[in-house]
Length: 48
Image 1: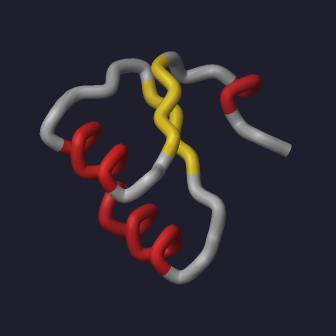
Image 2 (image 1 turned 90 degrees about the vertical axis):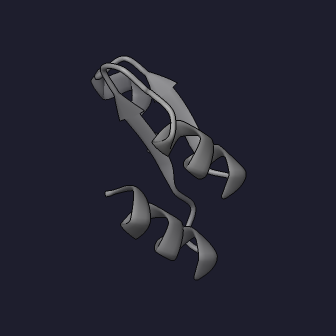
């Protein structure tokens, strides 16, 4: 999913992510792409 998120971000979509645990190397990849990550898999982590 990280590659899909990065591709959408590069095309101008606003992308964020939420997962129970966030680990490198994917967390580093997404942060470098400017994608905000929130640790914890909760509904309130999804922007409206």
